[in-house]
Length: 143
Image 1 (spheres, rainbow, N blue to C red):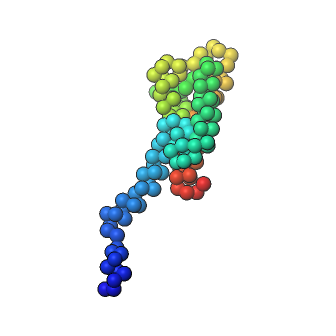
Image 2 (cartoon, rainbow, N blue to C red):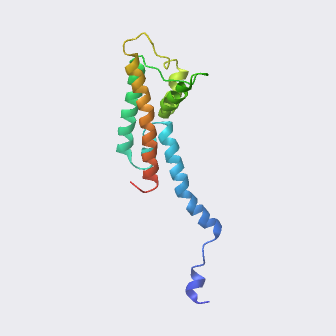
Image 3 (tube, rainbow, N blue to C red):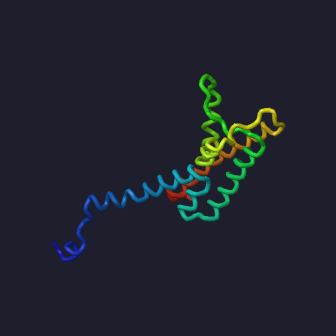
C-alpha cells in the first residue's frame, strides 16, 4: 500500500449513506414546506423572491376566493365530485385547514360571487400543487 492510499482511506458506508441522504432530506423538506404554506418551500431552497411571489399570488387567490363568499370544499359522503374539489382546494395546505377551523370555508351559495369564489379557492390549491412540483425541480437541481 502506498502512502497516498493510507492518507485517504475509503469513506465508510455509513458516511456515504449519510452524505447521500442529505439531498433526499432537502428535497422532501422543500416539497412538504411548499405544500404546507405556499412559497415556503422555495424560500427554504434559497429562491426567496420566487417563494414570496408564489406565496403572495396563491394566498391572495385563496383569501380572495373566501372573501368572495366562495367555499373551500370538504369531502361529502355519497358525492364523489366533492372529493376531487376537496383535494384541489386542500392543495393550498395549512391555510385550507385554518379556513375550516375558523369557519370561513363554508361560503354563501346565495351570494352572487359564490361561483367566482369557488373558482379562486380551487385554482389556488391546484396552483400550489404545481408550485410543489417546481420546488421538487429546484431541490433536484433541474431549475
